[in-house]
Picture 1 (tube, rainbow, N blue to C red):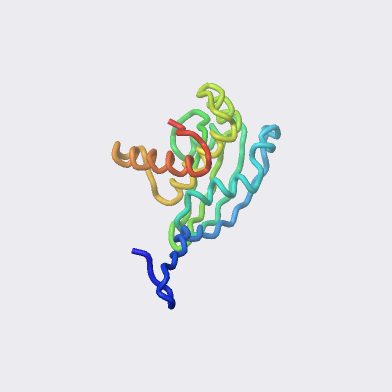
Picture 2: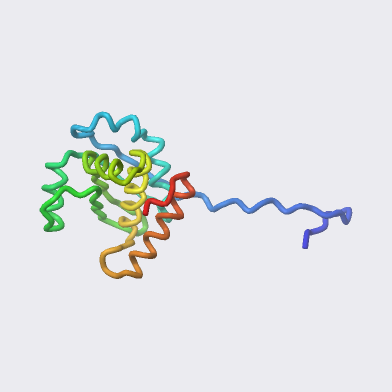
Length: 166
């Protein structure tokens, strides 16, 4: 029921505004062999994509690397001998998320082409995905966790104007 002002007339309540997004300190590393991706990965866009996934303040570094470095990192830290699309190195979760997101430019480009996605849309998905990992979300330990993470990714990407990545 609308509230009444001092004269007894109906007063419209102001629309509730969404809670403010947490602070994000973003660092960009060098682009190794994927300079063509710079046009898609503008700082403001990357900041917006990652910030959309955050629920707490964060300090996140983003690096775009080539396949050799991505494969070496994946082999060293995950014992998997291939270049993967994104690796999340999370160092702290509270009170501030501290993480590095390392994306393999050639893999991201190839996957986007194979999946019929825009390069920007695929990068947005992987940056949201990595930011969720940095906050403790997982998809490899249980099907329930995977479904929760995927549903959240779909929601977040939709709010950024991107289609369901799955």
